[in-house]
Length: 334
Ligand SMILES: C[S@@+](CC[C@H](N)C(=O)[O-])C[C@H]1O[C@@H](n2cnc3c(N)ncnc32)[C@H](O)[C@@H]1O
Ligand code: SF4
Ligand code: SF4
Image (cartoon, rainbow, N blue to C red; front, side, top):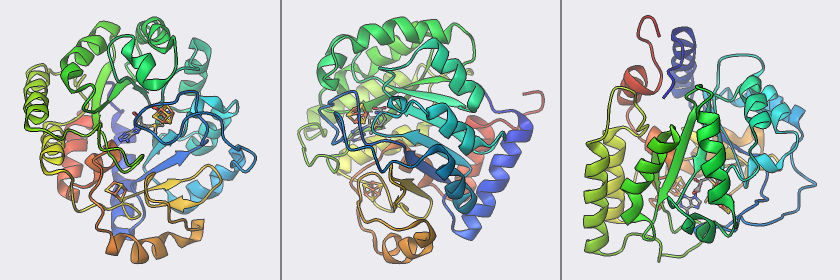
């Protein structure tokens, strides 16, 4: 995984430290649309939605000035459905190295032109969802031809050499046996790899959770295999502590101690603040501290371990160490 240059790493860590103290979010996820090109079995988005109240690109400036996140996720729905996505990203980045900006997408609408334009606008990392290493991906996502499209475009754009594409696989009961094969796929396409964990909170369906001792044993066996494949290139983006916490999440059926609303939050397509993508209590932009006192301080929800949580539930020293030694780089010469 491409390392962030020294000066930017320090800026990001500096802003993160200030936000931690000031109780502003470290990560903000902008859901730039609720509409989607897919109909995934594990998700509540899917298909067209009313789009007339979506924020316009210029509106994002106000959110950035108020929240000052050091990491931004641009997500949805499917963010590539917005024809003005490049403009949104430019407003978020404002020509600066901070925030570190991740586009979370299914890539059904990705082209080489758009990839290059989005990089130019300031996307630092492209997170691309993959649930299966073959045509079962199309079935799970309700999008015929998606796997073939990814098989063509992923290696082609990876070969440009920017090392900023991360295959993101959400572990479910359906694909737990494929964890290793998904790692093979990432390697053969020349991209990095990140795992996240299914939450039943989004749809209410527990069938895709790991519910049996056999499924947990399979998870551990497959993740042990992934651990053996780590190397200096950091192509496996999750830290070992995060993958260990993912195992515990499935074993215990949840992970307490969620900091949604405080360390991270979601901005919905029409501009409300929400603690996370699966808690729908809405606040205006100026209501973030009220969200912390009303929601975060009383929150007992333990129903997900999605990547935003796995990244931020740690103590500040731990988070800083993992960033300094891994995700961001402060090594001389990098
Ligand atoms: C909601 S999607 C939005 C971005 C884009 N449409 C995509 O699929 O990448 C972001 C991520 O959430 C994951 N996801 C969807 N439903 C989930 C669930 N019930 N639990 C955990 N992750 C989920 C997806 O697999 C995807 O990686
Ligand atoms: S996971 Fe992403 S691609 Fe699938 S329905 Fe949800 S928003 Fe759309
Ligand atoms: S654990 Fe936190 S981030 Fe996850 S669904 Fe519950 S409140 Fe949201």
